[in-house]
Image (cartoon, rainbow, N blue to C red; front, side, top):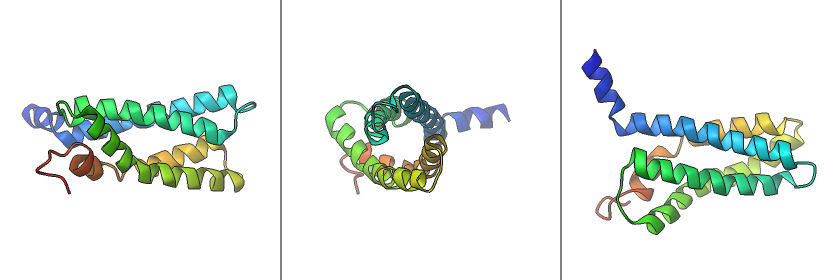
Length: 137
């Protein structure tokens, strides 16, 4: 049992899920904190943009060094990482205003969006962001 647990912890998928949990908490807390601090003076879409750039950069560092453990290729992988996240970002930029216009709290709306869109990124990062040149789609 202990050996099986250690083997699971060493897997890339487990590291991805752990990192995804951290990134979700970090990104949500960042958006919520910025919204709480600046929403009276700054439009929520500006807050979303700032929190997205910082959140994606945090996620990139975590994925590069902890999940996929790649060496070098910082700029190429960072740009590909953003390409994979661009789908999530577009969904977020469309969904947040719609959910808020329907009366949903920005905190609840952002939590819902982040939770749903995070589920689809593992394969994109594995096969695009951090793929070796031989493995790229």
